[in-house]
Amino acid sequence: MIGLLLLTLAATACSTHQVPVAPAPQLELATSIEVQLQHVPNEYTAEGPVDQQLLEDFSRHVRSELLQRGYEVDPGSPVRLEIDVHAFKPGNTAARILIGFGAGRGSLIYTARYVSEDGEVLAQIDGQERHTGAEIYGLGENRHGAFSAFAGAEKTREILLFEAARHIVGVIK
Image (cartoon, rainbow, N blue to C red; front, side, top):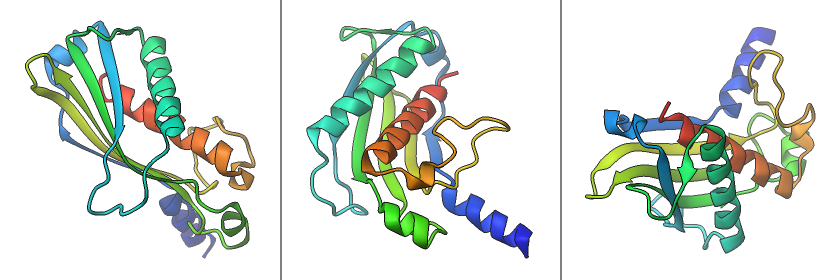
């Protein structure tokens, strides 16, 4: 019974990533990448517009992750990273704490494409980040604090943007 409960918690806490276009070999040879973000609602997300501050914060996280992995972030780069943010919901802290099991979770839905100068898609990732506070990060690794289920909207936002940036840049190497 306890095992089933733990499995349920782990399943509600996971993020989903699909890579419909696997990274092209020339993407691994890139040394600099230009970053562009925009809000693009899709048929699954009839939410209002994503605020500009979210896009700026997301761009900062992506640029930071690229720099940490040894890439230059250059507006004139032959490789462009286009990120379409479809929806963002910070979730509800009270529901996360009182109900659990995915209730009140925060979410970020996006599509990221690495595009060459001639418009060829070098890689694509369709992602859904979720934050329930029950996430299990690596063994002995707790990036966001032991009590992230108690996180308010700002902390949830930072967690979702950080994890999305890590997954988007991680598709390269």
